[in-house]
Image 1 (spheres, rainbow, N blue to C red):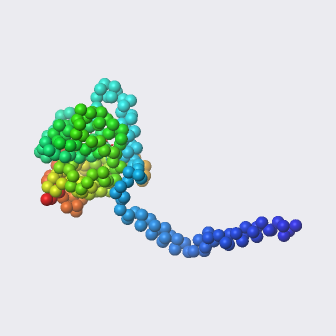
Image 2: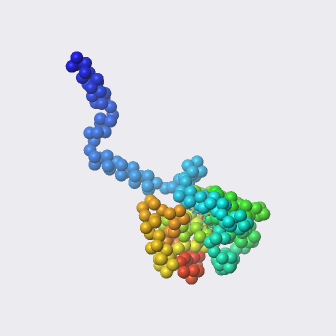
Length: 280
Ligand SMILES: C[S@@+](CC[C@H](N)C(=O)[O-])C[C@H]1O[C@@H](n2cnc3c(N)ncnc32)[C@H](O)[C@@H]1O
């Protein structure tokens, strides 16, 4: 009777001894920890894959901005025939930005990239002034709205990017790269990596204009402090601001090899615009 009771346990112990798991258990914790660390280091230092269509990396940028666009379609501005983005500034301000930061770098034959067109506010001003316009956005719902607004223009392409890189475009492809109200929402690493991509896709001798948020400005500091508790650890608000400083922007651009044409900290009391050139 007694031996019959213990038989299954003996069988179980035998099986356990044969299992590879047994070997795993006898290895030291330090060994396993180091292996785990190696694994993490290997994977975190790995270069971002260049062709990632098949991987479809979904970022919080994509989720948040798709949700914004869907919500906007239910709101009063849409019902009244307005455009997505009208809510973010005055027409006068936008025209001022375009005249100051786009017009000088546009010629009729220019091939232009706009990163984060949203509802197409700046795209609508860029399109008539260039040969080809590529609107690249992480949110397909935004691209839908831009495409709707620019449907009369046959020379505009709408490109869904994943927020990591601009691998869809060849090197030395664009005469002008513009982005407004987009980098103010990016984490510092995403800002740097996008600038590195701009270096790759911009033609030598050509200019890019990017709008950023400054922690050193009065408005930037106030916003940062007011929202700090809402953006701790992985709990980030949708569309939260990513503040840097003009000095950090300068450091990034110089390290990447750009020439700085201008850094304008006067556009409002929170943000700044960098104008930079890839040398010939
Ligand atoms: C505040 S809206 C600004 C839209 C437009 N530039 C304007 O001034 O009206 C931000 C836009 O950037 C896009 N965006 C956010 N993160 C992005 C990323 N990492 N790469 C490309 N587009 C992004 C959003 O989907 C959205 O269309």
